[in-house]
Image (tube, protein in one colour):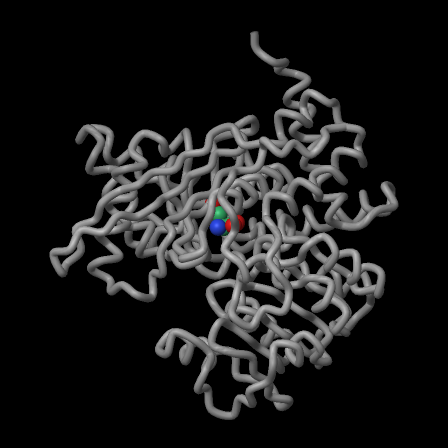
Length: 442
Ligand code: GLU
């Protein structure tokens, strides 16, 4: 058993609170992943030495880089890349642009990528990075300058067989296109075609995959379907609350609407809203794209954050920042299931409170793994100079997600434990088997 080692934590404090209207103080995210990991370690009685290795990231990079903005001013930016594990394959994980990015957050998010990839049986390890700034304060021209300069600063720390970034909060396919273009341009000209897969989540014209954009939301929906099937719960006529209406939240709501699920409650950084008749998830997504937030959507009645969590819905999908569901929020919640579209949306006490109330929880490393699964398909297509039809991508994603879900549900019954601990148990067993076979060099 590995004791929580304080030296594993960085000295950098999280920015608290997460949002102006949060009613619980934000914990350190690395403490959350450490506590979750400990449960997994105990569930499979993982060897001490392997537990010690996996309890901290392999590499932590902080870079300060100057960007000459279009105004002519030079501003310094702080960028991060944490590489947690590459035991099962190259480091893999997103790049986040957000004003509150901090080192322990990247460490936690990087380790979640390790468990997520191991659970989905992808030949990848885990990584995560980010740049600490608010992207909505910059226009496309400056975002391009920041992205290119950051990619240049990362240099050889990323690579198509070494560490493969992807979109995350505040970044998108355009960001990935700029990263790819910058990276290939700092390579020797003969290698340029071969290294495009250094990032995934690119636009289709730059080598991205069909289905990548909606993959995370689609994966969340497969999990909801599997849960509903096991519980004999009819999705047709069910109600939904979504927190965060970006890529994951909006795609989840749109795909679920085709299954008869009504979005009645929704929230983001601009406020919380309800419409008992149901929101049109497509029009809402268009509104958010134009107005950069939910506020001002016609027919939406503003409610408080407390009312949002207390709203009577069947399915609750957190798809915003981490640590949004603490014990206070969990106390208010009445849904049947929480399906974590975001990474780390529920803290330790929040999860205990939900489970004690009989609310099911489908954890992030399973629920939102659709994104990195289709990232893997994009990387494979690039590597083989192929381009798959949308149906092919969807069929493969569906098969892999449903299989993962079933493996977790079956194993949870054997282990007599919750789904999150089971996800860790499966992921850790895969890593353990590899470590045992390879040994620790020298
Ligand atoms: N940022 C996404 C995640 O947290 C996707 C990562 C990827 O595609 O590499 O899973």
